[in-house]
Length: 204
Image 1: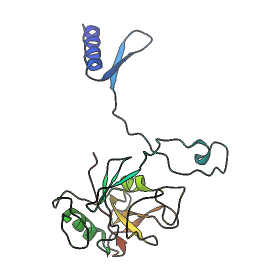
Image 2: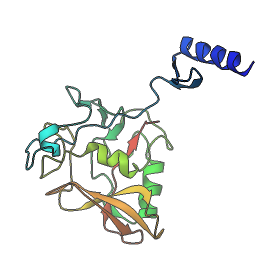
Image 3: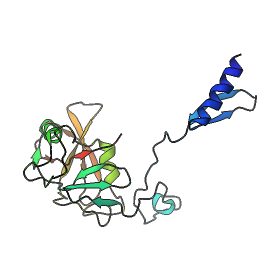
């Protein structure tokens, strides 16, 4: 009875987008649902320094062309991740982590100095988590470490940007990201008022 039930479930899930598999002993195993994975993008590094290194193999998902779409309303869509970024990468100056969180969460269309005319409301925007921030970085470039022909403005190359991700071993710190000479990620004291704010919306 159990085997009949497993076969039935496997066939049902296969019909709705899953894929059934069975072991060599003939017993069905739990089906894997198609599409539930997160492809890892290429880093952008092209120069190779050793056989089998990143610059040699170029593993990962290639960026689409164009990588970014300037929406003409103060926002930029990343066509690789689907995330929507504020085009102005310095609309708010330097802040503490708490103030950066508040600022990002309250951002809305029409706010002075942002260039936003997208109809967004407070609560639509947020501070990116550290992996979302890393998805922007091109590890083969510097000054800034962003993909070629990006449309962003007011980039702060020599400084760091807050992420929303707290440092696990000391929760008074959060990760911040630099896009200057090279792509750098560090934990930083949340009370320091000298990191910038770059907002994002969308994502899963």
